[in-house]
Amino acid sequence: MPAKRSPARRPTMKDIARRAGVSESAVSFALNGRPGVSEVTRERVRRVAEQLGWRPSTAARALSGEGAATVGLVLARPADTLGVDSFFLQLVSGIQEVLAERHLGLLFQVVEDVPDECAVYRRWWAEHRVDGVLVVDPRTDDPRPDLLDELGLPAVVIGGAPDERHSGLSTVWADDAGAMASVVDGLYTLGHRRIVHIAGLSGL
Figure 1 (cartoon, rainbow, N blue to C red):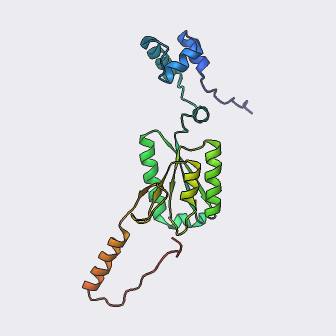
Figure 2 (cartoon, rainbow, N blue to C red):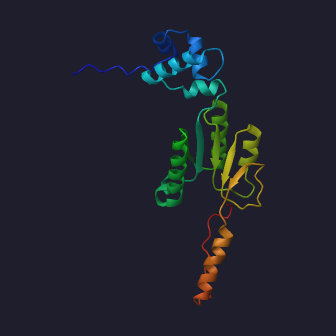
Figure 3 (cartoon, rainbow, N blue to C red):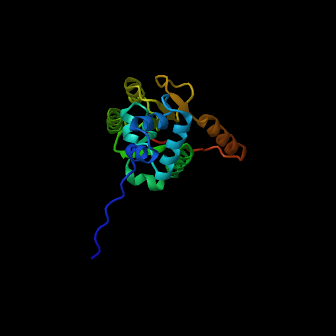
């Protein structure tokens, strides 16, 4: 049986310093865009870092206050419903596509209900796991905007109406009322007079 290979070791700032012939502090200054090194040294350090395949640690970035380069998304709904709900699959796909262009990650989690979702936000905030979150399924008497405002965790609410207030959070919305008015007008024009509306959850 062949021997198990050891996992590859990630290159460190010490490796870069050794190969570039400079101190570790000079490497830190060069890679973080801080003054204290010449442009020649900065360029040499960056070139060596690229050759070694060095990338900044997201954990280290978070601890230093530079951010985790990650956006969070929590869905409070039964996990077995995601496969039959094409909206959320398309939403996640679109979010991932845009974040990837900016070299940002998506931290995605499914939970049972809104209290569990709030617990995830508190944990992510405490652990510096995300730089911000996307909030879906706005609800009446929604506790999430106030919680996110209390934590100071940046958030964008997806959905709802433009006149709803979400504690100053940014909102992305569609004109659902206008769309439904167009649908009903179209059905009425075709001669339909008995029109049924199948609603979702009353709390949404």
